[in-house]
Length: 287
Image (cartoon, rainbow, N blue to C red; front, side, top):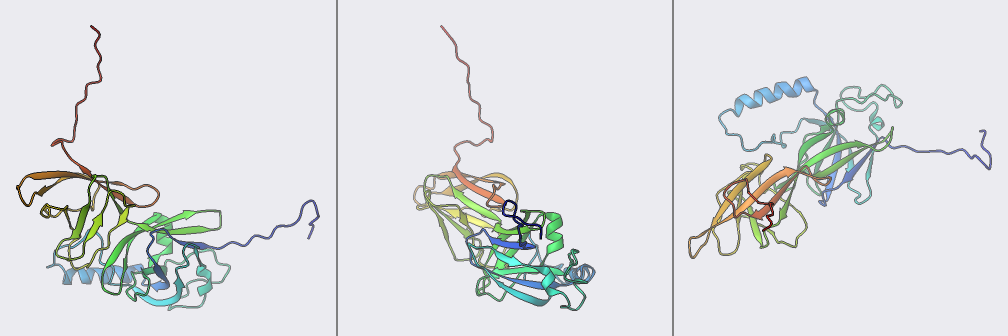
């Protein structure tokens, strides 16, 4: 109504959420009804008492103890095209009323998004969309059917006043700046990841959540290093011992805040200094 040739009416269609896979790993998603917060807290307290004799295996919670009540919808990863998500489609579903009507803009905390590696049935606990909207970023594990997993980071951003985008990114990317090929291995496992100087940043696949998230480093002609962690920002010096001469070679491992493509970056560089400080003279004298 009221349109003219000079000023036609415009009809715009909005999607409440887009899901974008930015981690180069085929994923699959489920929209789930998640356990109410008070019930989940009680269950976690009971689990903590039962597991109190075990040591902490990771800085992240175990993701296989899912609090998902039921699956509302399965969503295929359509990368590179984003996948569409409309929580209001689940009106009347679930053990509790998730929405009062399709026009209800209030987002229930019981609507969550679970993720897994494609063709796997081991989904993470549902990420509450309301919780993700408040925190902006939440860490999650994406499991494969063999128990291996990738650490991911879910990031929510607004693209318009009506549409939010959920980006699944690598939690940590590894960069080889050492000038020679390096090999990474999760402690007490057999799988290897080779990092070559010309490679693009690599996403590490952890082999099992039953082991501590510790890594070992080696290169050709050298023994494995002592275990080290990349769970916190900072830098450390890792030493490798030559298999023939026994001479030590040192590498600097720096964990820093990631750029737009990951939460953290890990950089490997040669380390010829024993101190984190270096003195340089920039003074010039004339005769």
